[in-house]
Amino acid sequence: MDTKLERAKRKRVERDEECSDDNSEQKPLCKYGEKCYQKNSYHLKKFRHPHRDRDVKPEEDLHQEPDKSGENLPFSSGLTDIKEREKVDSGSNPLLITEHENDYPGNKGNGNEWPPSPLDAKENIKQKYLVEMPDDFYQFWAFCQSIRQQNTSELFKDSLGLKLVGPFELLDQNGKEGKPKDKSDSPLTQWRFYYDPPEFQTVMVGDLNEGYHIGYFRDAPNEMPAFVGSNTESEGCVLTPMSENLFSALSQVISLSMKRVDPFKKSQLMIIKKQLDDWASKTGILIEPQSQILKKRKKEMVAKTFYECGIVVPVDKKTSVGYRKIPETSANIKKICKKIVESPNLSEQEKNSDTLQELVTYVQYANDESDYGMGLELGLDLLAFGGEVFHPTILHLLGVAYELLERKEFFVILKAHLNNRRRLATTNT
Image 1 (cartoon, rainbow, N blue to C red):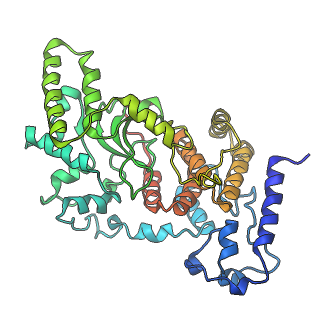
Image 2: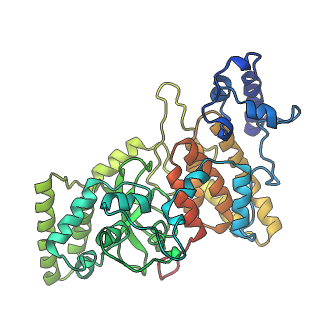
Image 3: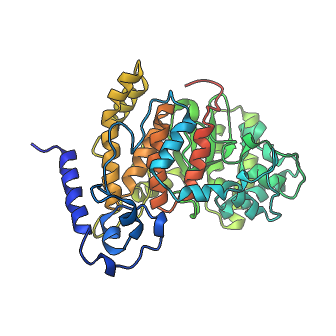
C-alpha cells in the first residue's frame, strides 16, 4: 500500500512531465532570468528557463528531491559550526535574499561605526529595522514626551516596570550625536529575545528576570503591524495578541497592575490611565478590549503555529492554493523535536531526524504547488521550539518561504538573530 510520501512523489513526477512540453521555445522568458529557482508547475509551464536547460544534464532530474544525507537539503546536528551550515544551506538554495541582505545598511559601516543616520526619524527607523512604524508608535512617543521630556524611555519604569526600547531608543537619539556603536549592538538583535520570530519587534521591556516584553507583530515587512503582543521568555514561545495599538496595550497593562498594587500606587496608575485615555480620544485612537483583537486574529490566520498567534498568507478562495496543512499534529511535531534535541549522540540524532526530514520534503512539494504557508508554519514551529540543532533547517524553510512570499526582510532579521541567538531573561526556563 502506498504511503503518503510515495503518492506525493509520484504526483510530483507526473506534474514535472507535464511541464516539459514540446513548445517550450514559444514560452515567454522568465523575468527573473538565471536567478529564478521556482519549482511550482504553473510557473515552469508558463515561462521559459534557458539556463536550466544549459546547466542541467539530460539525465538529471531538475526536481530531484533532497536526500536523507543532507546533500541537497541540510539537516545537521548542531555540533558543526553554524557558519559552515549556513554556507551549505545557501549553496543548495540560491536565494535572492542574499542580495537583499548585503543591502542592509548595518553591514556597511567602517570598523565599529554604523553608517550616518538619516535626519528623518521615520527613514532612520526603516533603515535600521527594515520596516516602517505605524502612526500609533509616533503618537505614543509624543504622548510620553508630553509628560516627560528628559529620560522619556523610562517614563513607566517606576509605575509599571516598563522601559521603552528598540525603535523608541532610536527615535530618542535621532538628530543627536552619539558614540559609535559596536556591531554587536545591531538594532536587528539588540532587544530580540530567544523565541522572537522575525515578525515580532520589541518596543517595551518589563521584568528582565522573566524576559517580559511587548512589541509589534506583522505578517509582512511591507505591511503595518497586525497587532501589539507580548511574550515572557522564561515561560516559553507563546506570543499573546493584546491590541491593535500601543495605547490599548498599555491600558491593559495598567488595568491588570491596578488589581495587585497598594492604594497609593493605584492612584498613580489611575492618573496615567486618564492621561492615556484622554490623549487617545483626542487623536482618534481606539482603546478596545483584548477579546476583539483575539477574535479578529483567529479569523485571519491560516495556522496557529507553536506561537499560537497564527500566520497569515495569501490563499486563493476558489482553489485554496496558498496553504496546506502539515501532515502531522502539533503535538507529534513537538515530540519529534524533543527526541532530536535530547538525542544522546550524533547517530541517534540523525536517526531521530528522519521523520522531520520527511516533513521538510512535504514542504518542498507544497512549495512546488504554490502552497507556501506550509514551509512558513514548519519553519516558525522549529524556531519556536528552540535548539541550535534546528538552525540550518529553519534557515532553509523560512528562507524559501520568505522569498516566495516576498518577505525577504524577515530573512535578514532571521539570520542576524540565529547568529546571535541568546536568552535575555536572567532566569533560565
